[in-house]
Each structure stands twice: as structure tokens, then as C-alpha cells.
Image 1 (cartoon, rainbow, N blue to C red):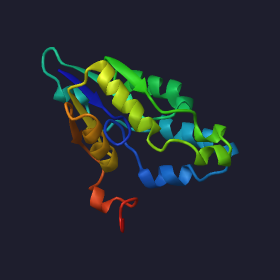
Image 2: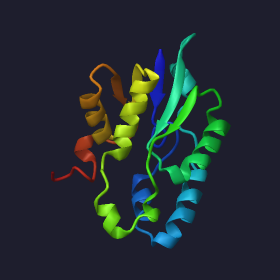
Image 3: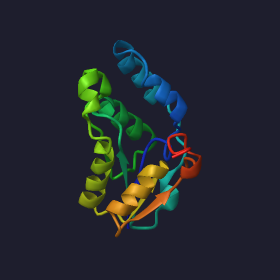
Image 4: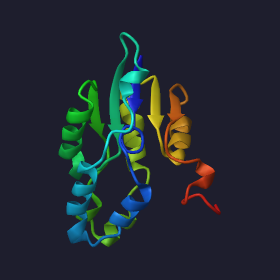
Length: 162
């Protein structure tokens, strides 16, 4: 079986509120603070606990390409038996103008996850973000998308009052 895991909030600790505050920093500070934040993440879950004899696991993260090398190093240190590490996010926010940011596809990273799940033949994928779980289930009816970690969608700050 091929099992896929999201990274932030599933395999390593992630604080959504802190991350959203980081993304509000001035452009010139954003890159440095993001690198510090992501390089200090701690492992949460050992994915090997989910594996049987011939199973393999892949890490598929929506992190942006500016964090690619840092992410590969973190995974090599903490997840050395991963069959692959896929960083599917796009260009970092700090490389866009405010005007360009408004035209970005809000599901870019999610579509990247979908495409990698299909490309790698993933049978089961673990994701912490409730909205992503719902959308991936819609996009990938033949793949078991499991919510692990995170919070209930009904309690998520982006869906409260929606």
C-alpha cells in the first residue's frame, strides 16, 4: 500500500494562528521568519507506525517552493525512510506584489497535492486541514482521505459563522 502524509499538522507540529500572524509580516521580514518557524518544527507522528511489510509512505506538503530545501533537510533528518518528499506549493507570497496576490488560485497547493496523490498512486492520504480533507475527498473519490490532527471544520476559525 502507498500511504501519503501531509507534513504540517500531521507529521510535524504546526500552529495555525502563529503561521497566519507570520504571513501578515512585512514582505522584507517574511522569508526570514518563515525559515526560522519551519526549521524549528518538532515531529508529531511516526508514519512508520502505519506501515506493513511492503508498504511505503510519501510526504506531500503544500509548503511553498521557497521552503523546499529546508523541508527536504527536515524530512531527511526526521523522516529518513520516506519514499519521497513532495513540495507542491507555489512561489512564496513575498515574491508577489499585493496586486498579484489577489489573482492567485486559492486552491493551487491543494491541486498540487491532488496531482501528486494521483501520480504516486497513493491509496490513503492523511491531512489535518478539514477544508482540504473535504475538497480532496471530492477530487479523489477513489482515495481514502483521512483527517488526522487539526480541528473539526465546524470549529475552524475560517468556517465559523459561514
